[in-house]
Amino acid sequence: MSDGRILKPDKDFSKEADKQIPEAQKLAISNVQAAIEKLSVLEKSTRQASDLASTSRLLVAIVTICKDSRDWGLLNEQVLLLSKKHGQLKQATTKMVQVVMTFIESAPNAEKLSIIETLRVVTEGKIFVEVERARVTRILSNMKKEQGDLNAAADILCELQVETFGSMERREKTEFILEQVSLCIEKGDWTQAGILSRKISTKYFARKPKRTPEQVEKDRIEREEKEKNRSADDPPLEKEDDVTDLKLRYYEQQITLAKHDDNYLEACKHYRQVLDTESVENNPEQLHAVSTPAPAYEPTTNIPFQVLQRVVYYIILSPYDNEQSDLLHRVYANTRNTLIPPEAQLLKLFTVPELMRWPIVSEKFGPHLYTTDVFSATPTSSDPKAHSRWQDLRKRVIEHNVRVVAKYYTRIEMGRLTQLLDLDEDETESYISQLVTAKTVYAKIDRPARVVSFAKTRDADEVLNEWSGSMKSLLGLLERIDHLITKEEMMARIQPGGERGGKEVKAH
Image (tube, rainbow, N blue to C red; front, side, top):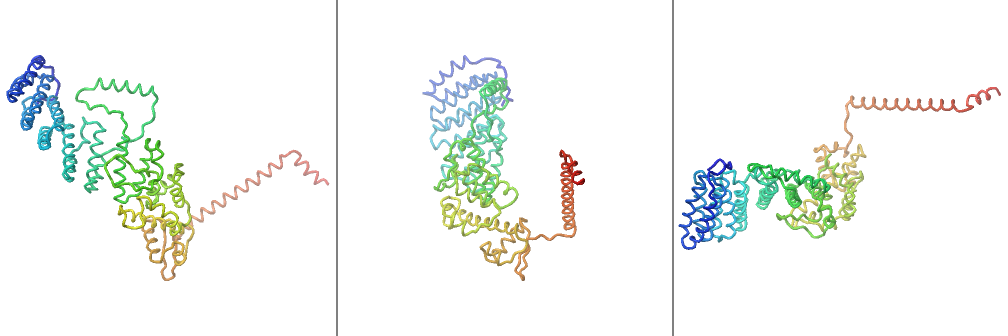
């Protein structure tokens, strides 16, 4: 095998090739082997003379003769033989592999697998045909999937490390990784799917600023200049194409992974990214609530239409912390919430420090929420996690109520607290314990006295510091008042006739 450099041919065999290739094609009608031997002799001469153009033509002609004769065994034999020739030109081998790949579609089903395996053997360990190997492997994976062998399809495709392929375009790399993740999800290998999905950089999906026609023309000229100066060994320039379909497909997979792990906050973030897609923004139908349940996961580019709905659902389902609280208020500030009035009302309840009675919330919003595929009142839903999400919503309402009580009370009797939370004592203790463990609130339960204390115990230093701060604030206010009084006195003195009038009063 040559080192890959394009050398100036010692001799041009194009005339000989123009003459012998048609003759060999006519001879192949009656004697295929003789036609191949005729071209093999000339191929040796062109290869030794480093005539890339003629060598490529001869290799393509040989494999085409084998294909036209429908002798697939001979085709496999010639592909292996020609690729192992001493000093074979890399570019010629690449051309031959590309042409043989086009034969797979027309080959009988029984012979497709042998051709694919031959190409995989020829391309194994060779960087200059890594893209062709990846594409052949993808075809093999699709064949295994069609046969119902999902595990084999996933194993075959996931062995490719396409992110390291320098000669493959970024869009094709992303498509390969998305297909790997899709197979892992269908296979049920959620851990591997999460690992593979992290190979895709979300910066690739970022919205690009709109450009003026002058900027577009300038970028086109610069791109043509770079393409003209690019050498054969340099990777191809990245095309400026629309990646909306890849973005929607990527975030659909991420949402599926987040739902499986019950990571509601991440699901909300992914839905917000979908909402930020220009095609979704320009299509109001995708923002409205739809009562029809979304289908189970399918590796397509179709995102469920209830994007805006899902953003609200998953942010209120997320456990409370600083990040969740910040994102909750940002979602609440979205002006498009007017498109979904029920969800907007439910979201508002979580943004104000007021108690929510779960029976009232369930009665008011339950019938509407049951119409979606996110929630279900019973565990007999098509989505087994829908009922658990309804239970999680009840849990978030109760946790919100506990935080509200902790804000307004320092001490409260257990009976009164259970009345406010609509719970019994055991459930109340359980929820308070969970929030204390998560360091969301501070609380102590005095069981004999049946009192819950939300006041945090402070040591002497903290009390003294607070008293010192209060005194400093008080003295500052007194100083401010003294300054205002002095200012009023001075203003009164400088008014016209102020002092004369005062003296006249004294004279009387």
